[in-house]
Image 1 (cartoon, helix red, strand yellow):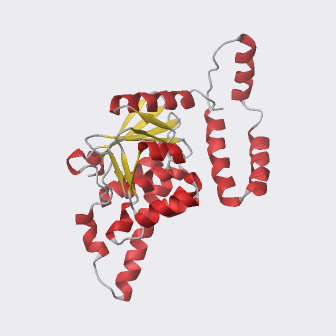
Image 2 (tube, rainbow, N blue to C red; image 1 turned 135 degrees about the vertical axis):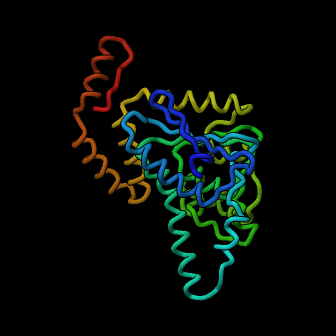
Amino acid sequence: MSDDILKVEKEGHIAWLVLNNPQKRNTMTHAFFYGLIDIFKELDADPEVRVVVIRAEGKSFTAGLDLVEAGQSLLGGSGADDRENLRAHVLELQESMNVIEKCRKPVIAAAHSHCIGGGIDMLSACDIRICTKDVTFSIRETRIAIIADLGTLQRMPTLIGHGRFRELALTGRDFGAQEALDMGFVTHVCEDQDALIAKARELAEDIAGLAPLTVQGVKDVILHGRDNGVYQGLTYVAQKNAAQLPSEDVLEAVAAFMEKRKPDFKGK
């Protein structure tokens, strides 16, 4: 089923992951979550893929969790076994967002129209976020008596700061493209979906044209520094560069500069 609601389109070194269940506004089902885990493991291992872009078909990027399907899990019972089963289930679903963040390849999210609830979890796990000017964002879980549990509460504060974030998380209110841009949650606002895809392609091609091991190393160092602090991060990047330099791509970069041409990086 995940093959129907999630599809991958490859374009050179760019992989487009398409949310493909427009009839249900790309709501997040069990097949959706587990499909993400499988797909991102494949994309991470694919040497030809240098950048991943997430986009969606239909009127909405995603309306968030499929509450009809999730109802049985959320309301299944109040006994000790039921609570433990639910805890284990949530941990499994969290991995669907973790694999996005852990993917060695940079991930760009291109959101349009509605990006609600679990959509914020997904975007918070991505490296770059762009949107259309008509987008509506919301940490909607708060308004339906659920604590957001797939990563928004852990990741989004590091992106926009605790002050703005706590208001959004505690109220669950809607916020639009301009507010998202002002707070740094997104980096570009596009006129419509066509412009959104064009901007996502432009960013992805720019990244894909760089030395892939360097790009992947930058992402790795950013995440390590976020989770471990400045000085451990500095030690880590020193070790990283010592292990990686010199590489064939560095030599190619120097040669291209001397010859006044565009470098052809091979990831070696």
